[in-house]
Length: 148
Image 1 (cartoon, rainbow, N blue to C red):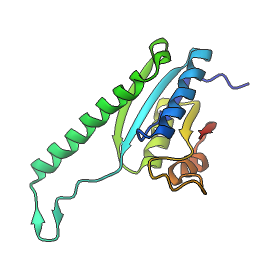
Image 2: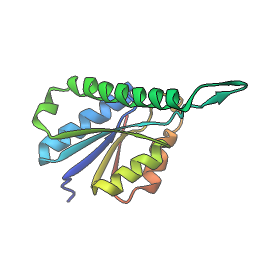
Image 3: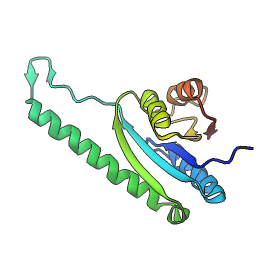
């Protein structure tokens, strides 16, 4: 029987992610597990668009602001759930391709359960499992719980 000790919950701050976080926290409370809450910034700030360019310093500042803002949003998301007070939660932000960074985080932290929303912010997925969730499911070496 699966008794998770490290649960990864990726978040894109959507209502679907809230449901996944609630599920992850409930499981963590039941088994005394640690929760790793992760947001992946997949938008790369471009230095030039057409003939208009900004300095590398400005790009770095913008990227740093995105990371700071994501960290604040993760904390606000956690505050929605009173059960989070009874669980050790580590919130982190990464930059890159979302499913790749989720899988990398899982490997690096020795995650034994990923709880992920089957749909994300794009909302397209009334018909399909979201591409991030699908790729995490295909690439994960640990069990994945899809929520909806």
